[in-house]
Image (cartoon, rainbow, N blue to C red; front, side, top):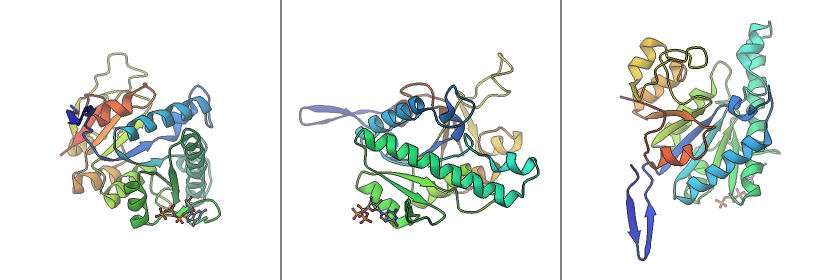
Length: 249
Ligand code: GTP
């Protein structure tokens, strides 16, 4: 748990993870809609990020685009896979700009960096600059995936987490963690508190794709899968509370 430290007459909670990579799936942003961005959801997430920043954590974010366009879905309907993936990457930029706007409206400084250069819109991804922004207390939002087709935004999260030296990947989803079967279809589905990377790979649990998991396994970055829709959850996780499912070595 996040222990308490005393600074003069103040007692503050100490975060368990001081540099985090928060992965936000595009689907979470739809809220009650079928697609697109629900402003209430994005404002709630922004508010929670602000609170976590207030605890002293450095926050980088990788955002998905599935609420707008999914590359895999496009290609399954006959589109060229590479073009479909590029459309998916552009969708992540829309979400990143929406989140940036929501954060800046409540006074949180941010920088968006894109993996595909579009300098009129945002900074290009530069690792050292991203780290500098984090050190200066800005929230850095990585958009455009890895910039390459065939790679998911989960893989982007693993890659960026390693590059910036994040201590943990927080994967925010619509469910409370990883289950042995689909909790939306099976009310008796059992939630795991902990799993190893190898268990996830062998049993093909839908935590992240195999490339993303392998990267985390090779570099021993823990992943916490948790429900981003439950209020206060990001803070609970960062303070070390038992939330969601933890995947580690
Ligand atoms: P420090 O000087 O290190 O504190 O960082 P900074 O981001 O404040 O400085 P910089 O002069 O790089 O950026 C000033 C503003 O311009 C920030 O809002 C950046 O996000 C933005 N910016 C920097 N480079 C680019 C770029 O290539 N494209 C776009 N669109 N904006 C940029």
